[in-house]
Amino acid sequence: MISLGRTSFLNNAGVSELYSSVSSRQRRYAASLKVVASTSRAGDRNGTVVMESVVKETGEALAAVEVEQESAVGGGVHDVYGEDTATEDQYVTPWSVSVASGYTLLRDPRHNKGLAFNDKERDAHYLRGLLPPAVASQELQTYAFSTHQVKKMMHNLRQYQLPLHKYMAMMDLQERNQKLFYKVLIDHVEELLPVVYTPTVGEACQKYGSIYMRPQGLYISLKEKGKILEVLRNWPERNIQVIVVTDGERILGLGDLGCQGMGIPVGKLALYTALGGVQPSACLPITIDVGTNNETLLNDEFYIGLRQKRATGQEYAELMHEFMSAVKQLYGEKILIQFEDFANHNAFDLLAKYGTTHLVFNDDIQAGTGIAELIALEIAKQTNTPVEEARKKIWLVDSKGLIVSSRKESLQHFKKPWAHEHAPVKTLVDAINDIKPTVLIGTSGVGRQFTKEVVEAMATINEKPIILALSNPTSQSECTAAEAYTWSQGRAIFASGSPFPPVEYEEKVFVPGQANNAYIFPGLGLGLLMSGTIRVHDEMLLAASEALASQVTPEDFKKGLLYPPFTNIRKISAHIAAKVAAKAYELGLATRLPQPKDLVKYAESCMYSPSYRSYR
Ligand SMILES: NC(=O)C1=CN([C@@H]2O[C@H](COP(=O)(O)OP(=O)(O)OC[C@H]3O[C@@H](n4cnc5c(N)ncnc54)[C@H](OP(=O)(O)O)[C@@H]3O)[C@@H](O)[C@H]2O)C=CC1
Ligand SMILES: CC(=O)C(=O)O
Ligand SMILES: [Mg+2]
Image 1 (cartoon, rainbow, N blue to C red):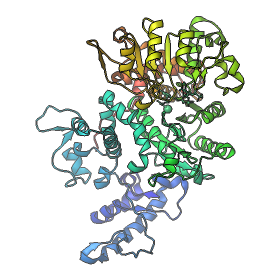
Image 2 (cartoon, rainbow, N blue to C red; image 1 turned 90 degrees about the vertical axis):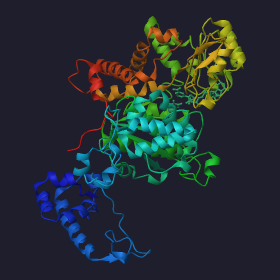
Image 3 (tube, rainbow, N blue to C red; image 1 turned 180 degrees about the vertical axis):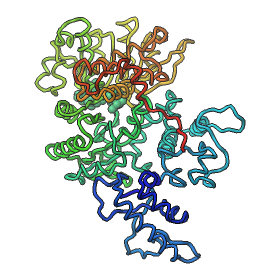
Image 4 (cartoon, helix red, strand yellow; image 1 turned 30 degrees about the horizontal axis):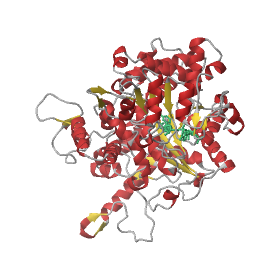
């Protein structure tokens, strides 16, 4: 398709001559048309305009406008698009508009400013009458009668009782006014993170079929096998830098949500922008639909995915391979791909297979089960001991009990390095009493595993037991904040994957932290992108966690916080990005040369700003 955008006219002498030769009425009609080129090629889509064709097609369009002006359906209404006069069995063209002016401008989330268009812009961009007279500002203004869009949005959001309604209102805002969405999210990150991300995004995924309104990302299903490259080209943006992709099989701790897992890549990418400053237009959420084994969804009349059991084995591997190849072919070597919420039987294989050919990471493995490996690597680094020795300080418990050497044969490959010498132990509480750990980390995906007995055992062994209940969403958390503080008599240092409100225990207020990979992946991503890194290395993940740790202040520690507040997240992300980039340069994996002198400043300068621009 070719866009008859006003900017296209102004940018080309030939076209602008044509433009000036037609009446203003015709111009307005032309501006509201999109011409489908008869020689439509993949490269011409979405506004990559071949000017020669534009001149030809523009002429045809204007001629068509003249003809249409003559014909009218009953009541004198001009049937410009030919839709009203077509009978139901005739084909009609789905005319649409891509000119960023007038009504279209208000419908373009990337450029829409809503009531914040000033009078001059309203005149220049054909907005008069399309907006009520009030002129609002995005931020608080001092002059009288100005309304304030962020304040109004927060006021409206706070009226909703149900988190899902807040989520839907935020998604609606993202579709309506992208800059305002990010401004609101950045300015109220502590309040809105639980809305656009965990826990609410979990509920949104469960009900995605019912609340689905508009595409927020690309769906690539088995039906698209053999044409994934074409499907990728259907996405309206060209300069994609980061893809978050899921196959929906392990959505948070909620299990297989099939195609409805789309909420997760959408939410993660919103955080790439809000928390890490990656341009929204550079972000592409993707859901790979190979079916679902979730019977409830398969029988749900509103389910939006393929109604079949999951494809596995070669069929699955081939689709993923076509996808990974197509992504690299279209976007190049430096496209960052984050694998998200894949079940572990695919996640490890995908990461191993594509880790050497693509810029990929998996924030669940590399911040979930892989927590153990990263801690071992850090211990090895700090104590100058072999990583094999460091691993012996970490013990894992799964659904069958303590992971010990006698179980080695039957263990999945990623558990084997943790099978230490020990007698079999069936329960978590027995394992704690035997091993006497200082830190307890829960990533079981199953709620309520940290029982009173478990927390009490930790509190008996440790003066200050560190208890991290990382499973998401809140319903799957291993214990609540209140339980951790109460059962440890206020001694636990607690953080959870999804946030809990402050807890009052014996007249003292405890503020729980949020231990979530959202602290890491936006800054990690920014660091990889800004340095033009071509592969992710474990040392970059360690650099990211060290950078995060360095942002925790003595005041935070005094409050029992292991993590800095999310309110400072953009500053934190800039530090993480700088450390990741520095490591990439050190390892010779960065391609952006020369290396910027001050990487923190450079990271900050790369960050997307949600402030409105003035339109000429
Ligand atoms: N806060 C954060 O940033 C993050 C949180 N998560 C959360 O972690 C959870 C798990 O994710 P992930 O590691 O990918 O899931 P997996 O399914 O890969 O792993 C879950 C592990 O927990 C074990 N398990 C299950 N039930 C029990 C039990 N009753 N007692 C002890 N262990 C048990 C499983 O053992 P078995 O193999 O025997 O079944 C398995 O080893 C999810 O809820 C996810 O939301 C994930 C990534 C980041
Ligand atoms: C946070 C996250 O990535 C998860 O729970 O899966
Ligand atoms: Mg995840």
